[in-house]
Length: 111
Length: 116
Picture 1 (cartoon, chains in turn green, orange):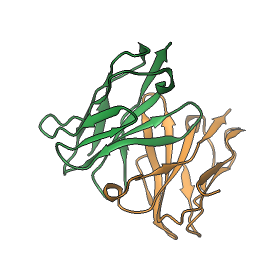
Picture 2 (cartoon, chains in turn green, yellow; picture 1 turned 180 degrees about the horizontal axis):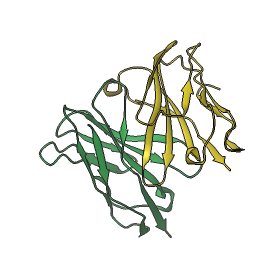
Picture 3 (tube, chains in turn orange, purple; picture 1 turned 45 degrees about the vertical axis):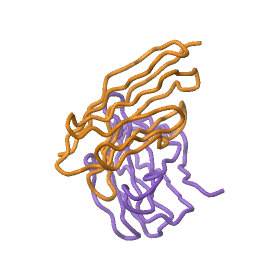
């Protein structure tokens, strides 16, 4: 079945540091890929998405590129801020409506 | 206000009790979902619904029951709560095919359920 594996946290960084969160997937078809973010006490919000190979999703300074050859969708941000502290989830959809999530990576950015 | 609302936000109950978590959305989205969030597991799908009166099991449906008599409501019931069902529960809705939507699933703020 479909599955998503993302790097374990927690990740602690200083402001303006570079952030990478690795995500790899297993799917039988050609899934759409997503990154969601969860701020403390809130539900998940879509951060970015990519629907086909080589697509790059971007939002709020975050980027991720759909790499079919390595089945990966790593999240990157060049200069993090304290406000980026959150839990980040990689997810895929291999059907029209269901999402499969990774375990989540907690990121803490210190001033 | 438009959106997706879960209630209650926090609930403490005892093993063996029945408890119902409510979810209400104002967008008239076709699809609705219930997930549970546990440390180390991410979000796991409990049940989903493609339309009113159409529901189906997810990967962790044992011990849970859902109904969807109206498009906007999707309550989740734990018929006889167990400690292993202590978790944070999220409801989500989606208007259309995941790949075609800018915001594939909209999430509520969650219900933190503790079973003693």
